[in-house]
Every structure is written in structure tokens, then in C-alpha cells.
Image 1 (tube, rainbow, N blue to C red):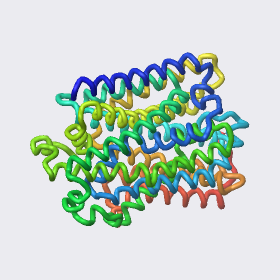
Image 2 (tube, rainbow, N blue to C red):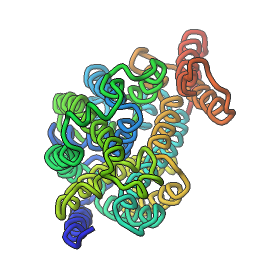
Image 3 (cartoon, helix red, strand yellow):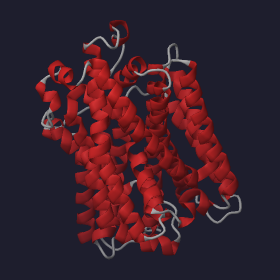
Length: 471
């Protein structure tokens, strides 16, 4: 890369760190740190939600899907649209008033209100572990992007660079730094992909006519996908909107129920069709760029689906533009990594170790964020695929946590035992099928039996089980 590109990226990184330092000086309590004083409005929340959910993992992962299956890969974010709008209609009206009154800061605190402390404790563990893995996937996404565009930089060294940046400004600034930087980061990503990435990619391969002539017709259709794949995505992604700690933090941070609902409607539209088609289209262009010789054969030989897109950017973008588009992708990656790291930290501090009304709670929260970020960085060094790690983290959390949420939405008095056993059965069934290697019919993912088992146990125990306290 040219020195001008490095300067653009360097300035961007310094700006993110300065934001973290600014809010570090403004935070006065853990309420400021985790829910931003509960004063956020729809645009900041909506853009933060979509930046967190799509983020770098899906940005790089979507490119990989576009490379492998073409436009049909966009269906993965259609599930995001459904999840966001269902949350706005079903979940937010059910939880906002309670959270505001009780001053909740984490998702398991909502479960504690309905089921008791034992359910909340185990939910905190499941959520914390899941978001630790999700943070790792974002660091890995940044590493693949960086190593694919900077000659001589290994994935591991790139992971160290991206991880340190995300950890430092998140640990310093808390949720305010996360939400406000998310707003800017999403604007950078969307404008960078739309006005820089797509035009240069099309120009480099010779235009739309060359694109249509260079790929199979199936790659340009929305039916180039098996139904079981869509089902797997739906089971993994739609429920995360109901159990995601990062999303509950934003509901709690909203200034009103209506502001939260409008934010979620906005987020759904930005996910699909906007980001969905941008991501897969650029991935498809990366495939064409190899066929057209835009990416030299020597460089193309060692790339995978997820590194093809950053490799294409390296060869098609002129000086300055490459720095802008890389800053856009770094924005997406950091916007998700910071939110997931905040979620895992909140789970450990408030739900597992029970550090709440303590004069040192803010400092403890910052230290925990730093420690967990370091663990996520180590995990990222040993994982090969961004999308696989993301979906694994999603599936683990969904299998264990969806049923208790369904319980407090549909039952006036959900039983603690129903919540506890549904969590245990869902996580256990998912873990069994995932680690045993047993193949399910029609290539269904282990999350499918995990979710179905947890819901079945929930309804059976709720109907026939005894009233037992989980305290």
C-alpha cells in the first residue's frame, strides 16, 4: 500500500482511541458505562444495532458467501430483517418498561426478574462465553482483511493489531464510545462500499456485461441455495435478536420505548436489502476479478472465500481510495467487536461475579473488558473461519437462551424450573450434535434440534412441573 493509505488508516485508528479516552473521562458509573445513561435516540441506536449485527464478520463473511454462491448469499441477512422487526413488535414492548423501572443493565437481569437468580447466573455464563467467541470472530475478520491487503503481514500479527485497538478504546469508553463510534463507523462503511468499492470493482472487470458473461447464471439468482441452509440461518440468526446481550443493552439505553422500536425498524431495513446485496455483490466481483486476471494467479492461488474480497480491493483501488475502503471495513469490524466485548464484560461483572452497587464497579468493569478482550484475541489466533466462528457463537447462545425468553413473553408466571431445564437441554443437545460429528438429515445444523429441544422442555415443564424457586 501507498503511504497515503497508511496515513488514512492511522488517522482513523487514532480517532477511535481518542473517542474511547473522551468517554473514559465522562463515565461516572457502571450505568454510564453499560447503558449510556438511558438517553439514546433512534438514529444512534438504529445505526449502532445494524453496525453491531452486520459488522466486520458479516461484511467479510458476506463477501465469502457472494464468492461461493453469488446473490443467494444475501438471504442470510433477510433473517436479520425478520429478527429486527419481530423484536420491535414483540419483545421491546414486553421488556422496556420493566428494564427502565428496575434499572437493568444486562440481559440475564431480565431473566432474573422473571425466573430468579439461578436462571440468570447460568444465562450469564452462556451469554458471556458466546460473546467472547463472537468478539474473536471480529478480530479474525480484521486480521484477514489486513493481511490480505498489506504485503508481508501475517494473519496472526494482523489479529494482534486489530485486537489491541478494539480492546483499548472499548475498555476505556464503554457503551457511549461504542454507540457513537458505531454511528460514524456505519456511515463510513456504507459510503465506502457504495461509492468506492462497487464502482472500482465494476470498472476493474469491465462492467456488468462482463460480470454476467463470466459467472454461471445461478450465481446471479436468488434460488442458488438449499432450503436447509436458509433454515439453519433462520434458527441461528432470528432468535439472536431476542437473546443478544448487545441488543438488550441498546433497548435499555433508549430514551423511550418508541425510540427503541423505531431504531429496530431502521436497523432491519439497513440489513436487508442494503448491506445484504452490497456484501454479496462485492464477493461475487472478487470471484470475477480472479477469472479476469485482475488478481494475479500467483496471489489468487493461496486465498479462500473470505480473503478474496480484501485481495481484490488491494489490486483495484487507487492510492487513497484503498485507505478509505479499508477504514470502512475496519469500522465494521470494530463496531461489532466493541459491542460484543462490552456484552461479555457486562455478563461477567454483573451476572456472574455480581459486582453491582460498588464504588469500584466502573474500574472493575474496565479491567474485566480488558481481560476478556485479551482472551478473545488469543482465541482468534487459532480459528480459521470468520463466518463459522460467528455462527457457532450464535448457535450456542440461541440453543441455551431462546426458550426462557419465549417463556416470559408468552406465560404470565413462567416457572423457574422450566427456564433452567430448557436452557440446559438446549445447550446440551446443541453441544452433543456439534461435537459428536453426527450428521443430521438434510444437513440441518445442530442449532435446530437444540432450539426445538429447549422449547419442548420449556412447555412440558411449564405445564406439568411444580412451582419451585430458583433462588
